[in-house]
Image 1 (tube, rainbow, N blue to C red):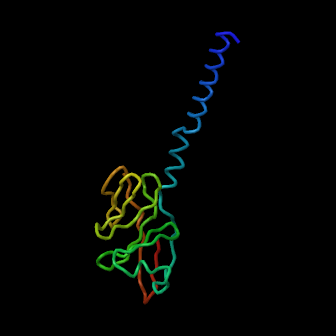
Image 2: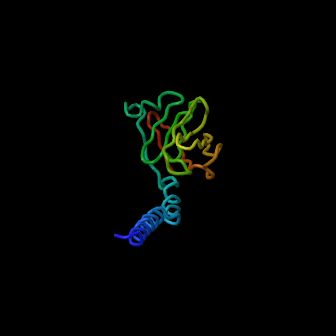
Amino acid sequence: MDRKEFLSLVGISASSALIMSCVGCSKGSDNQSNQSSVNGPTGVDFTLDLSASANAALLSNGGYLATQGVLVAKTNAGAFIAVQQSCTHENYPLMYEGASQRFFCNNHGSAFSEKGVVLNSPANRNLTVYNTSVTGTTLKVYS
């Protein structure tokens, strides 16, 4: 193989690799899937038995659990709140920080108030917030 053939093969290989990497991460496809994945679930309507051991985290102020795409928390004041489980920035799971009275994403640092309002970017959309009501030991979470 002479020098001209070698350079031609290297150029074609490099071009192919570059094209494949660009096609695999096109912005158009990411934005479409990302937009649909950062919205909270719709039609939410479920109950949690607060006396069940699986829901024991909700017995303590500041405790929380995630179920059915919803993060349910008990505030330091003893009220129940519920928001979508995923961050509106890039769909990473949120956690509830009772001491700070906020929802937080460990991935990029977005934070949201207990009412779901953005406190820290990079998120720029509020969380979907769900209604809660308690009857005896049953907590209902609904849209």
